[in-house]
Length: 79
Image (cartoon, rainbow, N blue to C red):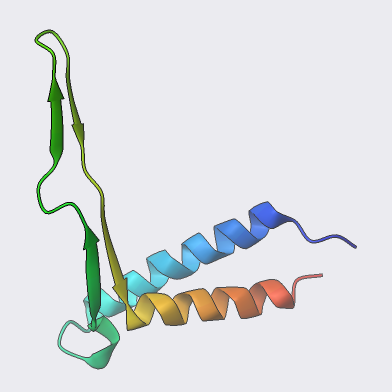
């Protein structure tokens, strides 16, 4: 039986979210240790009548990496 790639994507996304939540529950522990990547200030594209703001920041923590690992283990055992 072929596994669904959307299920894998959703499980990984859930692992990232739950890992980030657990990391925020314990802010001064090793679980919340990580690195932030992205733009320090948003990029603004203003042409007078239209203003578009682009911004992206990713925070990779130990807890989110553990969430991804658990999600991949769960995905492996899905039939």
